[in-house]
Length: 151
Length: 115
Image 1 (cartoon, one colour):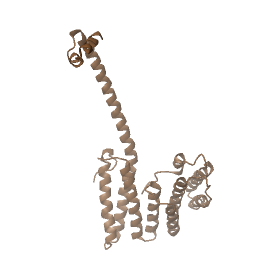
Image 2 (image 1 turned 90 degrees about the vertical axis):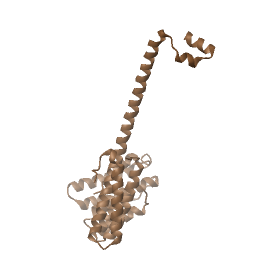
Image 3 (image 1 turned 120 degrees about the vertical axis):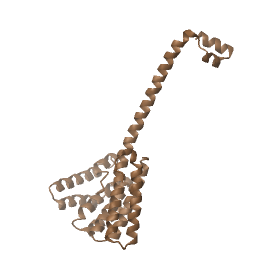
Image 4 (image 1 turned 180 degrees about the horizontal axis):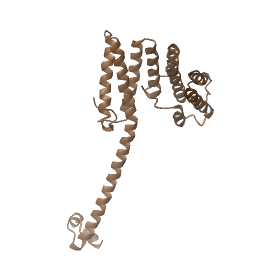
């Protein structure tokens, strides 16, 4: 299973908009912490509810677009992965909402393709799942090349 | 110092540098040894920095290479369910090739077992 390479907590440290919109980044962190706590209790519904509320909240204009995309894509990835076992159609919709924010050759876009592939596989759409996994694979390969590691 | 000045005055500095007087040999050996030690220290520091850089690069590269190979496996699992689907077969083969390249690239990191 693909790993989450960045959490929103780590993202907040990278976030350029922190100085301008700390409350929004703080809200993202809080939503993730609530989801984590709910999952520890085995309460997936509350976890989904915490993340969904954050995803639907208005984003302040002061948040830079790249930061908005990264934070929301990370939340949609989590929503999609959590929803896959409950309602795979909604999981696909969450992944698509994340992808609609903009596709880039980064871990956020790759994670959304994996989440979409998981949901499509759950729905029995193996061809669609394979195409989604292949997109994620290529992004991971590009990111691997960028590390400069070579034999 | 006076020896160097007289050499420079004669315009034969290079020749003088190669023909030290006997009394100068001990000092020159000492300076050379010190320079060699300094050079070795610089090289050791450069090597250390290079190793640290490699470790950092591997820390980033290994999870990505694992993802490439995990996703390749998932593609092949899907392809195995539909042996008559050419597209899935192609995606599986392509994924395996990319996983192989990811293994090769990260060989210095030792994070993926060779096939």
